[in-house]
Length: 193
Length: 193
DNA sequence: AATTGTGCTTGATTAACATCAACTAATTAG
DNA sequence: CTAATTAGTTGATGTTAATCAAGCACAATT
Image 1 (cartoon, each protein chain N blue to C red):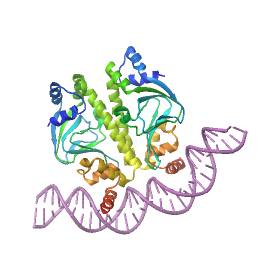
Image 2: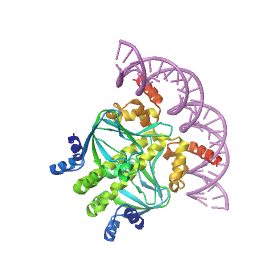
Image 3: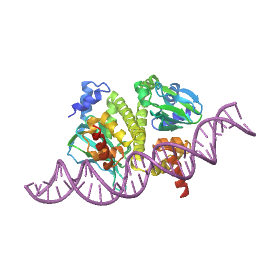
Image 4: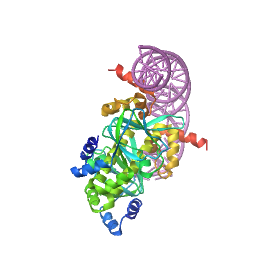
């Protein structure tokens, strides 16, 4: 279960076998069933989480009960409520397993200690953050520049691995449109083969 | 001109006076006139830039010539095309001075060397990236959850310092709406005092 | 001070998307 | 295996924001 984690780290920075072994020890493996909540908004988010297996979503709930998906995370991705994890604020996001999932949890203290202990870890996390920024900017441009249909076609082309697994209602929420609109878009697209 | 930079760093991590002096030396001061382009899309973005004075915007231009603002950066903020700066890709963003501005430029090599030289610098940049991620997520929620009018009211309330200085056309672009729509929204809001 | 442009506004019309309601298909629980 | 939920679709209608076109106001340029 930790193999995927070590592989992901080594894609970005070097780790000796000894360091890799140390690294692993900081992570708590945990399994979640489909539909199980990993984090409830209002709680403190105690972990930075690596997805070893499965698919999750993070989302907010507005005053009218409407859900708004911020992120999908599948194998190899990280997920957390960053504000809560880093600053100890109440979480604003819920995190739910959309499939049976296996996570590796890192606590704040664990992260600090890891950074102190292994030279390349801080670098790894900085690179991770940078990539995350570019992905978020890409997402902003998606809805800022394109119509709902164009945005849908783009995500399906660029990240089919995630969006072919996610339920349509959550994809609609991610795009900021209603399930009805997404359904009509898909019909249009299908009609044009 | 460097004082503001050192103050910004020391808000997040500790620096000895000696380190601060070393730190400063890595930055190239440069002035830009209002309307001057700091970066053209298609070029390589050579610098991570700290705004000592002034106001800038980064934006993309689509196939129809439409502009889409990604970021405003005022005093104390950083701005760059991250993909281009870090990976050496062609820049996708243009960066333009909206006021006469003073910037402090850090090259990629400079950044690497700084990180090697001063212990807390990597940590500073990691924290900076984390805050940037939270800001980008906040922005995604803004347009995902709220109508154009609600989004406008929110940014004016939460970041009046920036949005009272930026031209309305660019605020509209930032929100993903047309200048006409923003004009009508402002009229509505004004009518209700 | 006159001129040219640019930024912002206003009105009329159109297009995109939301909402509400009813229905069908697919999952899940008993 | 069947009933009960939940997810997705479809249609009719309403709302929001985009587009097109014209005008005004302010700034920059001469």
